[in-house]
Amino acid sequence: MILIVCGPPGAGKTTIATGLFDRLDDGDFELVHSEDFSWNTYDRLYDRVSAHQSADWLLDGTFYDRATRERFRTLPDAHLVSVAASLETCLKRNRNREDSIDRRGVHAMHADFEVPRDPDLTLDTERRSVEDAIDALARYVRRTRS
Image (tube, rainbow, N blue to C red):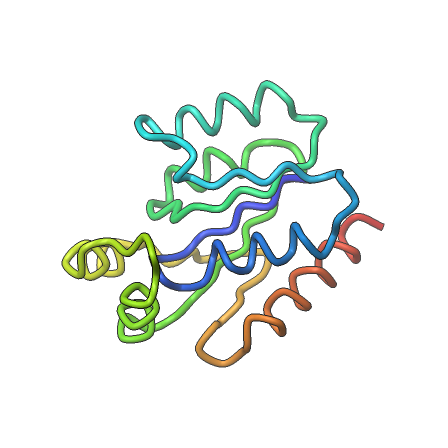
């Protein structure tokens, strides 16, 4: 299984992906954050995942453009999880982050983010708590893997 967790900066992707990884605690998934790569992020991430397709992957990144997401979705057993939040919420969360990015960057990425048309699961972090979002994703994983 390949879980692609996408959304604009500050939407809650990393919190949800890390929370799910900690909760599953079965050692099956490999968690990779886009920040793990300093250059050519999505090409390098794709190369890593496609070289080990039999592994279970939990991928955390903006995946802001449709073409990048679709490239990953061509991999076997890939599932797109869209994490959504308003610009105001993303800006507020970004201000409270230790590794915050420039406010203009959040604005630009939120504006440029192409909302997925057909995600397998959408987690609206405006309407759900982090725990509820992780619960929903964990249920999805259990249901899909069985």
